[in-house]
Image (cartoon, rainbow, N blue to C red; front, top):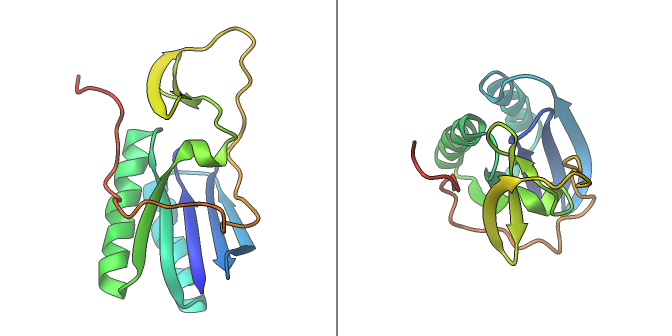
Length: 150
């Protein structure tokens, strides 16, 4: 079974190819989601028989989340590939994620809030796990924005 994990909420974009839940190939791409995903997936679809795509649908760059969702949902429908989602905290050691200005998304007791960071806070980079067996991904794939409309 081939699964693709896509993390577009920060730079570099991280895309992992998993075979039987184990990471077999990793792509780190600098640039815009809208420029990078189509060209990479064009190659991946030719090279692999993809069974599932998992993407990070919250929190982070709203534009990257929207673009990723629309693109991946289209691929999912046209190629009959299952699409699932996860929140970004799963892949950065539950560290704060950049929000607006000097504010960050922080997950406390399974609730996401937006606040300033304390001076000694450590922010971890996103990383693709070596194995995705322990993760429970969500079948509800719509983007979750976590901020009220302005």
